[in-house]
Image (cartoon, rainbow, N blue to C red; front, top):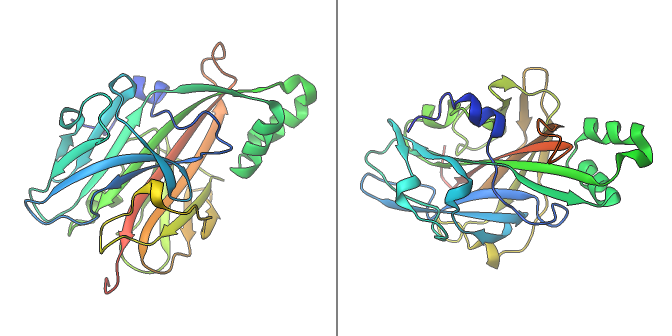
Amino acid sequence: MKLVPIASALLAGACALAAAAAPARAHEFWLAPSTYHAAPGDSVQLRVYVGTGFRGELKPYATTRTIAWAAKTSRMEDLRSTTSNADEIFGRWRASDGGGALAAYESNFVTIQLPAPEFDAYLKLEGLDEPLAERAKLGARAGDGRERYARCPKTWIAGADSKRVTTPVGQSIEIVPATDPTRPGPLTVRVLFKGEPLAGALVRAWNQKLANGWTPQDGAARDSVGPVAHARTNDHGVATLALSGTGEWMVSAVHMVPSSDPRSADWESYWASLTFARVPGRK
């Protein structure tokens, strides 16, 4: 399976998965592997959560919403055949080498409608200044928020070949680290929208302890935490986040544009996330 480039149909209808009915209560959507590091022969299971600050609800796999689901290793490995509809395990992967894997998921749009005050508050919270300004110009005529949203999560299962994580895979929106994100220190990323640099995007980062070494905790058992770093992308779509410390990390960004299907929604949003882990002793 090849994700680069994804067909124009994918770019038009790209990457979404149902999160929760109310974005004001559940914003982030992330991939959680059973381990963030795999030696040759190791098996990895991948789950998906939706929620806030690493506390989330486990989401089962939905075949009808899946456009692309693959792991980038020395080749593109299709993960769709490793799971089934309604399976809580979103995908399964076995490491054939020590280079690592970048798992990337895409699905179609999900439509929601929110009362105007709630929708505007959501736009403000997510730093979506342009849609908020456009609605302010319309005043009462803006009405309720009719939106269809799309999700594009990725996760990095660490290995020796950092090019697997620093090279775009072709999602409609994606966060691409400039270096191996598992290494300590600030992290510079590029945000791409339909393959082009996205300027002005708010990029945020969350941090949570790992349960044991490279193993993440169950999302339902965690406390919700707020973002620990944020930055806006420049004209080249680049932002640098002041990350420090170990544990599980999630970096996310969202972009909203007028809907290409005004019959179903006035706006369409694209959500990107990247999860990875940093452990003590990593240099």
